[in-house]
Every structure is written in structure tokens, then in C-alpha cells.
Image 1: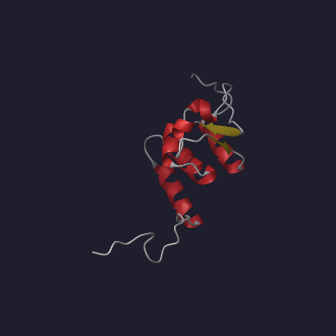
Image 2: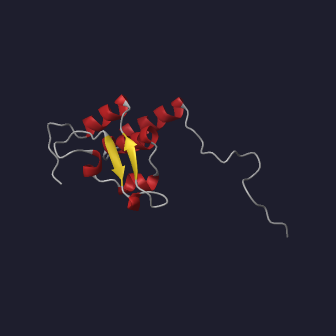
Image 3: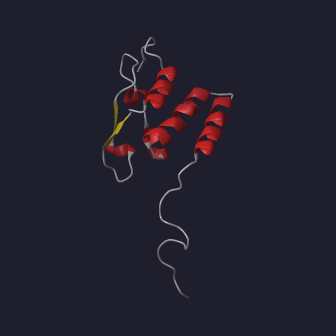
Length: 114
């Protein structure tokens, strides 16, 4: 029996990229959730806007994204335990839309209780 190696025919080996229409559709579904819609939207935004993987997202804690004063950090430091390949990495939270969304999730006027 012949064994196939490598990628399936017709694939490039790169992850599919969502279209703008698909991103808006997922965001609308997240907003429509009955339970924790802002958290769902923030999770999706961090995935798309910062390129975080599922394991990285599920491992994040509030303190990783917000300062003790409740402000969004400029850089999220992903610990080795969070990442693929067990390597630390820093993620810039520079897109203004992402920062605005995270601010609405946890406004600076409400200090975090860690």
C-alpha cells in the first residue's frame, strides 16, 4: 500500500484567512450571546487582532491583559506554558479597535480584583 506524505493536493499549508464579511458575522454572533457576550467578542478579537491561538487564549488571565489599575497593557507577555512550542513571546496590543473593545470589557474606572 502506497503511503502519502506531505500536504493534501490543492492546499498551500497556510491557515485560511477570514474575510471581512466572515469576521463581522462571527462578531455579530458573539454580541448576540445571552451569556457573556463581551467576553466572547473580546476572545474573538484577541484571536483575530493579535493572532493568539486557542491554547494561548484559554490560558490568559485578567492580569495578563490588564494592569492593576484596569488599563489595557501595551504588551501581553505570553508565558512558555501558554504557547505552542513552550516558548515565551510578547504580543503588542496596538490595534486601536482591539484596545477600545478591551477597554469596554474592563473600563479603567473599575479596578481589578486579582
